[in-house]
Amino acid sequence: MKFERKERVIIVGCGRLGGRLATMLSDKGYQVVVIDNEENAFKKLPEAFGGIQIKADGIDLETLKYVDIDDAAMLVACTGNDNLNNLIAQIASRIFGVPNVYVRFEDTDKEKLIDGFNIQGIYPFKLTMGIFEEMLESDEEGED
Amino acid sequence: MRIVVAGGRTQADFLIGDLVKKKHKIVVINDDAAYCDYLSSTHKIPVYHGDPSKYFVLEEAGIKDFDVLVALTHRDADNLAICQYAKRCFGVKKVICTVANPKNADLFKELGVNTVISSTHMIAQYISQAATVENLIKTMSVEDDKVIITEVLVEPNYGCVGKTLMNITLPENAIIGCIIRKSADMIVPNGNTEIKSGDKLLILSSPENQKKVMAAIAN
Image (cartoon, rainbow over all chains, first blue to last red; front, side, top):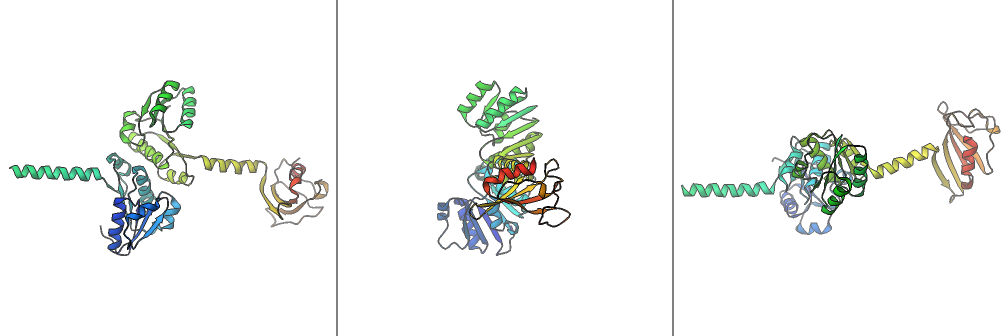
């Protein structure tokens, strides 16, 4: 990933991942906008959070236009619902042409929905499996 | 035709009944176990219990190369995922869904759903059509509803076509204040002005007399 600082990043879903990601990117100097439809969700952000919090529906086109999605450098769809994430990511990439779109999917089959589009999937399941595979491989090497 | 109906409650029940009657081959997927039991016993068709926005559920239901999929869940995002799976992974020819948010109608079409039905949209359309049928395109009230301005488009079959204002009997407290005609910008008519088909009349009247005015113009 190569972004110019001060570029805008939109994060939809202020859960554990969204909240931490927003904090990290904001600390690194990006202009961060976090959208969540639950006011309480923003409690996960530190008091000194330098980004913008918007309590709204992330799949609503008006919300996305309001945060100037068409000139965002990156969007991360990480609500707790795979289908919502799919919709948000597709709006960002296919309708507004956001150059870097990341989507979190619990269900790895959802990959089939974004296949061929300029959307990058993040799969906690695959990441966890990857760690176990690595661990087992290194154990086997250790036995040799 | 081979049709799969995914999700939905009452509308699904109605739609399935209708399609079965028309001898289509129907497969149903629904995430409510009790509702699945009800549907399969009522309509005698294969019903799969599961979340239709999951790939393996659609796979199990065997919808490959079906002609039509209808997604009726109450979540717009779920309907999009169902339609996209059906089209991209199972070669379903035509995908149709309902949306709760009318703004999603055009959006979903752009994202590959063939037909998007928004009931709010349809109601709005119906109302505007009903209004044009009666040609009461716009009614504006002034002075706390004491006076209303009605805009009427004159159809070729209206009784007033070809008549001068002198020869049209309007009820009391009503006057044709202005005629908007394509060939001219606007006309403030007098008794000798002739009404033509396609004219737009702006009529000032009391609200009680609006219907009588319409009758005088149309009949």
